[in-house]
Amino acid sequence: LSTEFRQHSKLRHVEKDVLIPQIMRERAKELCSDKVQAFTKCCQETGFLMVVKCQQENTALKDCLVGYYSDPLFYEECKAEYLKQREEYRATGIKKKRQTLTSNV
Image 1 (cartoon, helix red, strand yellow):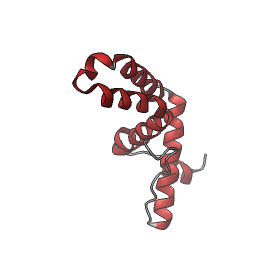
Image 2 (tube, one colour):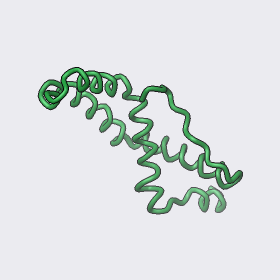
Image 3 (cartoon, helix red, strand yellow):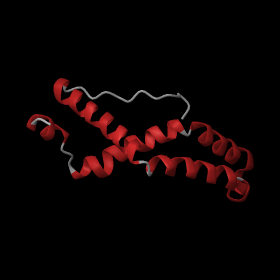
Image 4 (cartoon, one colour):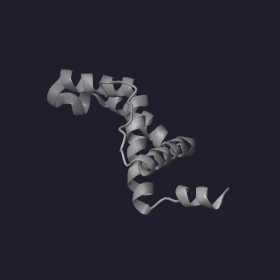
């Protein structure tokens, strides 16, 4: 790898621990949108009893999200997305918002 590429791909603490995980959370919510919707619907329908009544939906949602959070390939994809966004910002000075897969998440 070229020295220039290595310099551009170095990550600060805030990038590794805050910004990339933020992208991971956003993307995981999109990828688990069916489970997010099921849990949300259950909570809306049961009100105060959601703690008891929505355990199955909550477990399915957690399992889906944690599956992505603990996947090293998913981390690398999100890191690559972050680096691309950072490079575009450095080149243009314009921060672009992420495109979401679904509009209701």
